[in-house]
Image 1: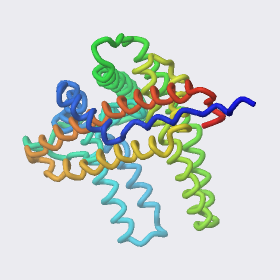
Image 2: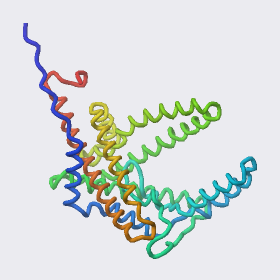
Image 3: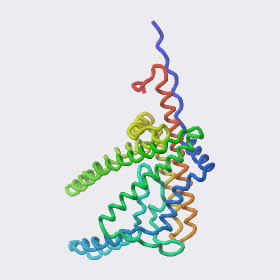
Image 4: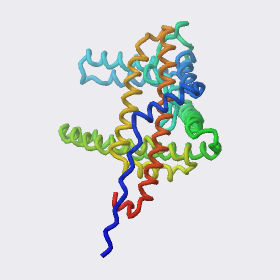
Amino acid sequence: MDPKPQLTPLPPLPGIVSSIKSGIDLIAAHLPAMLFPLVLDLLLWFGPRLSVRSLFQPMVEQMLTDSASLPAEQVEAIRQVIVEWLARYNLLTLLRTYPVGISSLMTAKLPALTPFGPPARLEVHTLTDLLSWMALLTAAGWILGGLYFHWVSQIVAGPGAKPFLGRTLWETVTLSLLFTLVVVMVGFPLLLVLAMIGLFSPAIMQAAVLVLLFFGAWLLIPLFFAPHGIYLHQQNALRSLYAAVRLARFTLPSSGLFVLAVFIIGQGLNYLWVVPPDDSWMLLVGIAGHAFITTALLAASFIYYREIHLWLERIFERPQAGPASL
């Protein structure tokens, strides 16, 4: 009887810390790559505010006037919160798109002042103008985000990479459209169902939210890596999404820990970057620091994706090894 063939040992998974360190070192050697988030945040800080206050504030005032069932103090508190948000909100923040987009510090901070005083304000007065601006800014965010991802991916790929820029941007828009359709067709109905459940039983709604968060955490990993195949392997949007799902399937929990590490580093440092007030020049330090770190983390994600892809190829090429044995 022939002896049972022995499988070769599994190669080690790519290191999370080493990938992040490599991303930081790479961007430190290619500082111009951080220009996209740097320029976007400077635009959102010093540029004009594209405001929707004149469009929505009368609606809010009317709704609160009709809320006779609420105490006057609660109505006034709600009004102040909404009016403050409308005064700060800048429609140009739609240039920050998902899952492909330019990272931005100012989209969360929504600065109301600059070192030169209050910025210029342009009002959106009609719903038609609002929808037009939303479509234009979202499309611009997809294209600019695609250029940003493409630039960083080419740095990671090295000088021998072939820049398929036109096709890359097309697949970026396709992936972004798919993401938007899923959010509209799945996300909004889920919110409506949760709201209806909450009317009958808040306890059941909380349980449903926990279940959705569990599945959402699993879906976050394929979503995080969904664009990477477009830029590193010139895949189409669907193929890149499938590759991200496959990566998540075979590399958990390592890939999940990588995404968590990127989130903790990026969001944790954001609390430091936004410490200076809106009208302080020290906020420039935060904007520059955010631009460098987020670009370095993006480069690290491309490095980790490339190494994980090579790891999976070695796994599937092992003797007697295949998907069923993993």
